[in-house]
Image 1 (cartoon, each protein chain N blue to C red):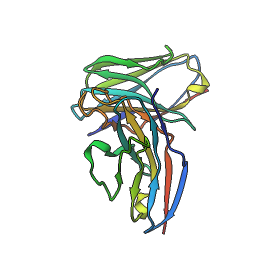
Image 2 (cartoon, rainbow over the protein chains, first blue to last red):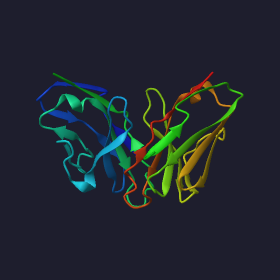
Image 3 (tube, chains in turn red, cyan):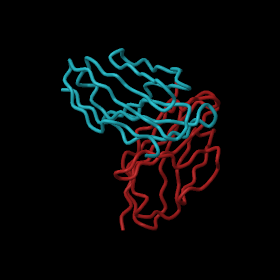
Length: 111
Length: 114
């Protein structure tokens, strides 16, 4: 069965500090991993996906198959990064967007 | 209007009512989805439609009935719901089967069942 665990419901950091949002997954095949973000009063939107290996808004995430993790990192947090972050897993291939989401982590960046 | 639009944004209904949620996407996508977001629970996939054909039904009770008349519109018909069905219902779309994990979400319909 697919499962995504985000152990931190709340995470607070100060502006300029590094931030890491943890995500662990359980899946027997080759998964696709994603981070979605929801800013205040905005809709849920894709932040990044592991296959793209890109940095979006200074965030990066590396898929670690050995540790079954896909942690989201940013070296210097900004106040505008405050949002709800969801890690999501897709079964890969023709998955039709059948994503399994984690519980989400609320990130607050203090000035 | 661009993106994914959901109506109504808020709905209050009794357990004996029949109502429908509507979703419309203006992105030219081939796949559409209903997700349910309950308090203290992760987003749960309910239904998937690809090219107007249902490809997934995640063991959803029959009191929820989806309808996809074309690739741009998706409905969720509701009848004899229970109070525990109160939740935020999110519609999403994607380009189709390839790289389908990039979902474009609507703002959601907040449902309260009395």
